[in-house]
Amino acid sequence: MVKVKNPWHRPVVIFLAAVIIVGIIIMVAISVIQNKPLHQKCKYGIVLDAGSSHTSVFIYEWPAEKENNTGMVRQKHTCNVQGKGISSYSANPQGAGASLQLCMEEAKQKIPAHRHPETPVYLGATAGMRLLRMENEEASDKVLDSVAHSLKSYPFSYQGARIISGQEEGAFGWITVNYLSKNLRKPTGTLGALDLGGASTQITFVPQQNIESYDNSIDFRLYGNDYHLYTHSFLCYGKDQALKLSMGKKLESTLKADKTDPIELRDPCFHPGYNFTRTVPNVFNTPCMREMKLANETFFHVGLGNWSQCQQSIRKVFNTIDCPYSRCSFNGVFQPSVYGDFGAFSAFFFVMDFLNLTSDTLATTKQKLAAYCSTPWKKIVENHPNIKEKYLSEYCFSATYILTLLEDGYKFTSNSWKDIRFIMKIGDSDAGWTLGYMLNLTNMIPAEAPDTPLMPYEGYVTFMFLFSLLILVLLLLVYFYFRRSTRTAQKDII
Ligand SMILES: Nc1nc2c(ncn2[C@@H]2O[C@H](COP(=O)(O)OP(=O)(O)OP(=O)(O)O)[C@@H](O)[C@H]2O)c(=O)[nH]1
Ligand SMILES: [Ca+2]
Image (cartoon, rainbow, N blue to C red; front, side, top):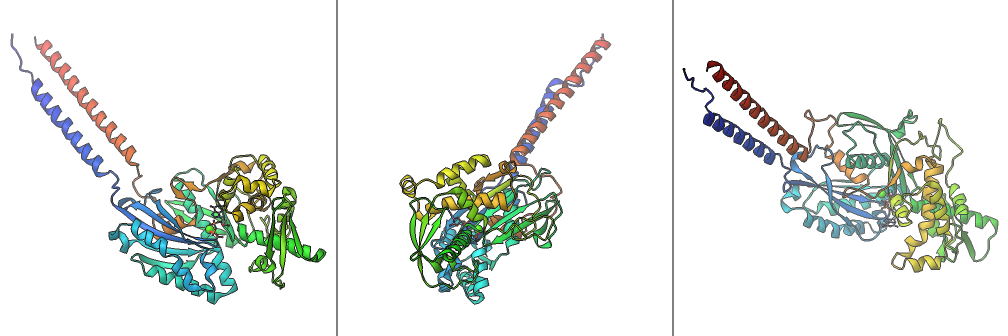
């Protein structure tokens, strides 16, 4: 009997397999560690939202190596500038720049010093400054010069202070909510954006119908997808200016009906028992109201607390009769039918959240609001001792205005009402135009999708783990296969 020597000598095979396995483990470990997001290497950007009612400073942060991935930029910090919006400094422009100091000092603390020179800072002013420019262009230029001068005195990379257009405000709000919801690289639908400020309001969405007016159409190519957006910004239809429009109309008709002395404006949008003395110019001091020269008279603003009468009075600020297109929202502005889900933020959220009306049907919302508006003012103050009376007194008007704007203005129905999500933040970032503005100006959203599909780090680790497991199983299979075939060969020879 001849004994054949086994070519797959067991210790050699075990040693080789061990070397290969250890090699693979080391390679996988190195690759996983190298691809780990580097939390410590971040870049920053600052955007100042100079709104009509106030200015907020937003600091954004993102991993330096991954700036073109969707959803990588997050809001690191916000600071609310004390006092009113920059447009209120028309008589004292230097005050506008000075008002930013505290928040800009805070930004210096929040961003590591070695990143300051490369951190871009942008200021975008919205409807308050649009109105000031219409009223007094010289004053609006001086206010912008003042904030520009102030921002240039900080160690950041100043990139400009300007009044953004209503289209930009709408479109960048849409980019923000869709970037944060990670909708931009998926084939799924996008989220429409509804923004209610103090002096203007924006609606932006991807419509199903053709956009009949050039001014309302805006195109983007983002991550290889084309988006054809409908957007419109209604100047004077933010909640503070809409209150003035509505009160102005009531005041005009009160004065026409009979000039009682003192004038008493009986207002269904304010609670019963509410009685406040105001001056007439205080209502009419806005370019949103037709020129109406009235003496510096005072009037009593008296609440009636009647929701349906309030809605009737608010309807008068929307012209829903004239429409030069196949369909309009109001004031002769083209609007396709609302389509898809919407994120409603800024004052849409502040007001509806305060009244606990963010998740009811339209019918229930109306019922609850009617009950709220008829609650005596004394009781409202008792129930909310810590809320500023100005905010508190206006919630009935504001919520009724929101319902009327969405239903009569934008033509949401009881059915599409459920598609509106009242939101303030997505993740830890605020919904608003500022993030989209910065992403656009820093070219952080590429027009074309990167060649290799991006995989989140967790997915990458799982992939590498499964890949090594597969190699291991294959090696074992090869080992057992050869072990069996050598044994069979031995038997055959025996
Ligand atoms: N109730 C309540 N109202 C708020 C709050 N913050 C802001 N508002 C009011 O909500 C309205 C809209 O606020 P913003 O979205 O900041 O408006 P803005 O950006 O200053 O105005 P625009 O330039 O028109 O966009 C204004 O009337 C504010 O006074 C809040 O925390 N609670
Ligand atoms: Ca705003």
